[in-house]
View 1 (cartoon, helix red, strand yellow):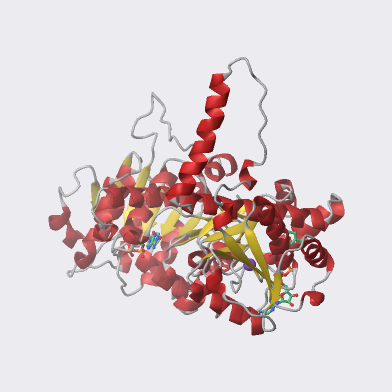
View 2 (view 1 turned 180 degrees about the horizontal axis):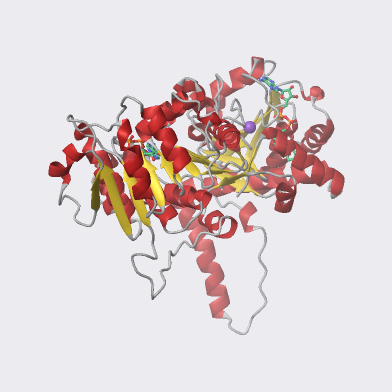
Length: 549
Ligand SMILES: NC(=O)C1=CN([C@@H]2O[C@H](COP(=O)(O)OP(=O)(O)OC[C@H]3O[C@@H](n4cnc5c(N)ncnc54)[C@H](O)[C@@H]3O)[C@@H](O)[C@H]2O)[C@@H](O)CC1
Ligand SMILES: Nc1ncnc2c1ncn2[C@@H]1O[C@H](COP(=O)(O)OP(=O)(O)O)[C@@H](O)[C@H]1O
Ligand SMILES: [K+]
């Protein structure tokens, strides 16, 4: 599923209109219809027991009629999605803005009225100020006799409705809602009524997911044609409620041709777009050598657990072998803890810390391994920048960089380092990303997709920007947004597990984008699995994620 910016959406709209000759009003009609369908579906879901029974009664009646007369094959059905048994109990207020988003709301109002739902149009601006297709919709609604009020001129009490359609601002919204728009949004939010948003919640930045003050808090957002980036990024994702993407007649192929490079990470995208074998089939004649060997450079005496977690996660993700290179001082405390793991003592300090002198030994070890993962629990040490540079420039396999190794990278001028033949995957959480990009954490979170895409392209790396809805961005300019996982995964070591998983997939022969995307996706699924094993997701610890793999 594609993710688009407001600008890309405008371009796709206009290509559909100009190149395919589909009139703008037809797209708006489709938009109105799918919005109405989703409102009706919502009414049906929340309908009282009486309504549900009535609906069941209808179905049962139909079935009986069919069974009662088996010879009668003739059957007619019509517009189930636009029928509602409990319509008489519903009264919806349609908040109408000046632009095309308001036009969508007006079209939806007509379909709702046809269903028998009472609708009242609430214009944020005088209806005379609408133009283009929105004005045509205004006139059609008026011709149908839909009641209308103008905010600020006529009496309005939102307590009188059973639901609100927010069609104030869509992708044309600029900055914080002003005037009547701001007042209507605030009133809708405090009304306690169920709110459905047309395309995006009014007050949301459609590209970044920032919410302006005020911003609609919707139960359902009916997103038109393509998923807008802002609906996936927090806090916008929280304001949107259940997002339902509905087609309105803009062909998907247009997005591909227009170079939209951002995707929601679904099993279909993993399989069809990235070529990942989701079943992870193994060759019947395969052996441990077939599935690759991870070299892990991690852990200090005080943070040996990070190395153990990454190593165990790598093994559980299916690579053939894992060697953990570690300071000598750690050996007594970790020997035998994970019996499947190979340990390589590379020296280090008396205190159990890493030292710059370990680089040649690591490079030697890497010659027989398929990937190097560096960072979990690594700590900082004198000469660490040169140490990392020698791994970067001297190794001949993919490199996964996490945790303290990211902080080392942030202190270096790594863009001037020699270009690598093999890929580099960086896996920062927002704090580490802030150090890498020289921003504050809040600035990183402001537009995670945009930042990740720019950074990956500029630095020629695959970037995994972690946190709720992790973003995977490639050096070629593509991005994938993951939605597996949950807040219970915010626990120490969960990121070390991810590093092990991605490294393991690389060792098994997946390329960087496949390994990063599939690793993040599986990590989230395992987190969900771990949550199901506990009474409460808050109880999850990182080891549970490994056990759920
Ligand atoms: N062919 C098309 O262009 C289609 C557009 N569609 C709908 O059209 C929407 C985009 O329509 P528009 O580009 O007309 O823009 P909007 O309807 O989002 O809003 C633009 C209008 O809102 C006002 N406005 C903008 N920012 C404001 C603020 N901060 N405070 C107060 N007023 C503000 C401006 O006066 C402007 O005229 C989409 O989100 C979608 O709902 C759909 O109908 C499908 C087809
Ligand atoms: N709210 C959340 N929803 C989904 N995943 C989350 C959430 N919070 C954290 N995670 C995931 O948990 C992991 C935490 O990693 P990180 O912050 O590096 O932890 P650590 O450094 O302790 O290993 C990341 O993969 C992150 O995406
Ligand atoms: K809206």
